[in-house]
Amino acid sequence: MKLTKIILLCAFVLLFSGLTKAQKSPVEPAKAPKVVIGIVVENMRPDYIQRYWNKFSDNGFKKLYTDGAVCTNVRMNIQVQNYASGTATLFTGVNPSSHGIINNKWYDRFNEKETDCAKDNYYITVGSDTKAGSASPKKLLSNTITDILKVYSMGKSKVFSAALNRESAIFAAGHAADGAYWFDIESGRMVSSSFYVNMFPDWVRLFNSENYAEKYSYRNWVTLHPEDSYTESLRDDYLLEKGYFGANNTFPHTISKYIKETGNFNPFKTTPSANLMVKDFVLQIMESEDIGTDESTDFVTAVFSSMDYENGSFGPASVEMQDSYLHLDMYIAQLIEASQSKYGEDNVLFFLTANTSSSYPVDYLKEEFHLPVNNFNIESTLALLTSYLNITFGEAKWIEYYDEHQIYLNQKLIEKNNFEIEDFQREVAAFINEFEGVLVALPSYVLEQGIQSNGMMKPLYNTYVKSRSGDCQLILKEGWQPVYKYKKVNYTDQSHIPMVFYGPNVRPGIIKGNYDATDLVPTLSELLKIPFPDKSQGRIIEEVVIN
Image (tube, rainbow, N blue to C red; front, side, top):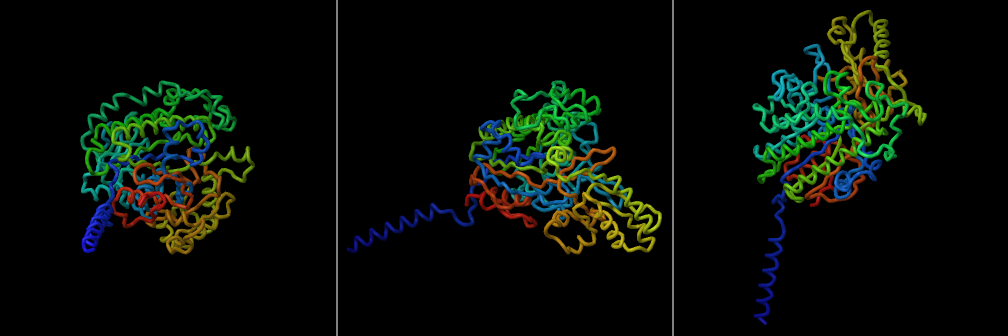
């Protein structure tokens, strides 16, 4: 009997010992991926995936959406939807009210001039003799997830980004990155700033010797498949489609001719060939910068574009847009295949999202569907406002600066004439609210007091920065588009963006809950097993993570 008890006791001890060894300590970190590949697409509507699904291959978008965690209801709840503010929001996990990037440009009251969100004349271009690289992330007031990764790994993690637009590359890379590269429309090369790179790498110089922009611009842009197979899109010669320079709206597109007309390589950025260049550049980063070669997680972001600035000239329902995504599907498939082959499927975490969504053109919505939308003429509105202020307060230059989102008053002049700033702000907002296309115009003192921070006002509060924002903030009604007489606007009022995670520690499935763009950073932090950002305004998307 005693012998039996001893045997049972030994068995229990052995079993308990085995169980405790099998279970991970609550403080023991799970294995983090060797490499993170971020795929960010500018102007990407989530519904492009459903629309083009039958035309996609099995290994690109379909692979991410079939094998990944797909968040179907993610919003970018900020006032100004553009690639600078959007990228900064995605990668910091906070809104512009905290990270400071309220727009691509804003008015600098201290220097009394417009300022660019990334421009920094202290630094010089590396890779060309233009000024495209006189830039830095110094106006970004918050740390990015890549900064947090750098600090956590004590500098061992390698961080890189590549994009067509400078702001996207810089705000995806953050302050502490090893390299951020973007396309210079003057030289046609991938360049960087001396903020990131002192000596231009030989491999980038060799890459630029391929002359992607020049080489591919002399090849006409033709459709990947026969034009009559693009049944998910409008006719190529759709009458309301403006096209390049308001005239060239059908395939084939002679990009070299468009480049001669602009005098730079901007038209190249609108083609699938530009996305091909970004994809090849990212593959070269992985090959040349020793990505994934040690135990520290490395982070590489590729930012692709949906026709860039010509998005509004063709629209979401165009053949050009569909062809761009069919090409991009191939490039994403190649990026996935190359990464998984190099590092192993269990070692690469992918995420797909967008820094902006895309609106349908006003003419299309009006003519085809009779929706109550129109163009909002900024200059005419400001001319009427100027007359009103002159009648009310006396003849003077009361307006210092304006754009399609805000109005800056001449505060020094207002104070000099012994008027109250709040009175001026209230008068301006009340006047702007009378226009048909305006959803809401709010005086800035209301935003500072935090009186109505929910509902339709939330994007205004999320974007307002006292030292950078104007005196009156406005949001247009859904579908309305701002226009200028001579200036083109890359505008969208759509806030719905895609967000997909695929790789180790990710639970595949469809996630239908309401989430925000700021939730990307805490969710990635959880997947990367790095500290949750102190200032993050988002939350972990729990359904994504395998515990």
